[in-house]
Image (tube, rainbow, N blue to C red; front, side, top):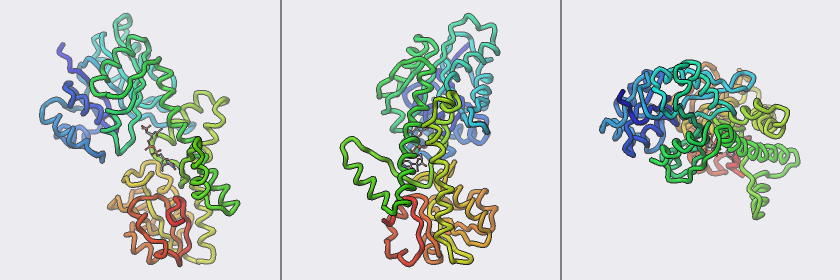
Length: 408
Ligand code: SAJ
């Protein structure tokens, strides 16, 4: 059986850059995705989402024939699973995508391959992947299959740089699996590659994002305490950060994206009694949108049918990604709770409102100047660079709720 070098299952924000960088470094790569649109885009050398520099890599790889794509895996020396791991209603991890990807790969195994799980996963997921293969292919029970977890740690928007430069953790079900995975990632990874067991690698990824979540929760809690005490939280943090061992993060409308607001729950689900701080941090960050809604209500007091400009919908500054965005949630919930107010949503990075907002009649996507002119209340939800140039005196006559300290 002829084998390709690497087969990447899941051509999303992580899988496609990984496939492209392997191809760039001389590997023969096949990418697999359940979405026909994604397969069609990649097959013609295009990237179906926004990520700086990725386009050039994919275009070159496809043109050279080093990267192909289809809906089905092909025989390969190494398989990399880069599929989503969302959480269920009870916050436990939904492993169904990992299971489906593993089952799709199983028929193509000969018994000497390396299977790598890249998706962020709860402790035990890599072993679970091995168990799924054992169940699907009992004939390979005593074979030389190897399983490892190599979590990704790249920052959206800087993926092509961080993929190469970041250190990497590689956890094997066996030490041999970890070593083989290390040799594979060495092809493009210039950072240190640190070997461990699979469960420690799974936890390391979750812990990194929980560390950030807990620290953002600290900043968010300080912002609520500061409001209560009538002090400026931005000045407070700036002053405290002059201490050589203090580095407080920035408060905001809550924590968004598909990583930091999700991953800590996998730790909580794995050890509920022991994860008190991690759970509380999640609650603090998830409570911030509700707190801001109350502040908007207070600011709008006395206006019968207020016009409210909401600046920013994205989950963080200078991107167009609205996934799990607290800003989006605030705009939606406020508009729904106040059907007689007019909401002017300002988001310079998108051309049309997402369906969730478009279905509410009192929200319109509005250019910045127009929104500032007509608003009774101005709410800052995201500190996009595009908003930083708005001078304070442009808004001095308005009621303001500023969750990012733009006009302090
Ligand atoms: N945020 C704050 N205050 C801050 C920093 C961030 O409120 O001081 C908010 C942001 O506005 C955003 C959320 O936190 O809503 C998350 O943004 P982020 O820039 O901290 O992180 P992500 O989600 O874009 O990427 C994270 C990164 N993890 C860490 O920095 C530990 C990235 O390296 C991971 O690869 C990524 O999660 C992932 O895929 O897990």
